[in-house]
Image (cartoon, rainbow, N blue to C red; front, side, top):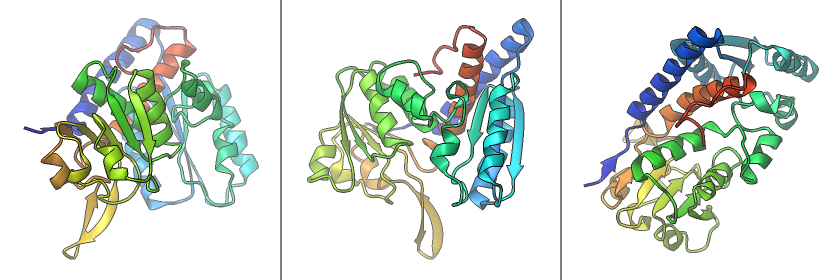
Length: 295
């Protein structure tokens, strides 16, 4: 019988572990991890994300620093704010909510963040460290996927993994993390020849291509673990619906384990943001890192 990997429950457990560690830090060391989130403009989806991040940060006992800037904020002013947050010892993690307004250079802004406080793991230094197998801040969504895979499989060594998608945010770092756990990794994408055959060789299939229900059951190896990172809004039977990059009904009949959409990978992203903030705080204070919450 196919196991449905419950991302909501897994994320709740991660948040509980973070909260317990934060409580010990505050009680034993007098240290409170702090997360600063910067929102530029009034993008509705971004406002929801920032609101959820603030609530989750407070819930686990961390300090939350919100900075909401107008859509016409000058790049120099945004960079000055980031410099101030870099220098603030109460701030251990900095997140600039993407996308930014078009007049702002996202790469310049992200790379202005202190790499040690880059809890999104997007800074070029962290990308390079991850790619060379060194200690880094790891992007939240791939980290969450890795945690769920380790929990389900135990050791990932020797398993064939296929990542469908090559984005800097999910596909590429996901492949690096799987390599780090000794998988044999293939990166595929929408232009891969014989994509179905490539996918059918995977013991672990991670779909992060951004196309609704692109991966169907006939592309899944029997017994494989399917991690669906996609979240797409579609119209079906006159109603709006959220679906992943995997056609869930057909894939679930074949897979050994699968994440649903919604309720799979999504909840892990904020949970891992909190875990990364805790890790950054521990590193900044030369304290042991939280077990099971890092790559």
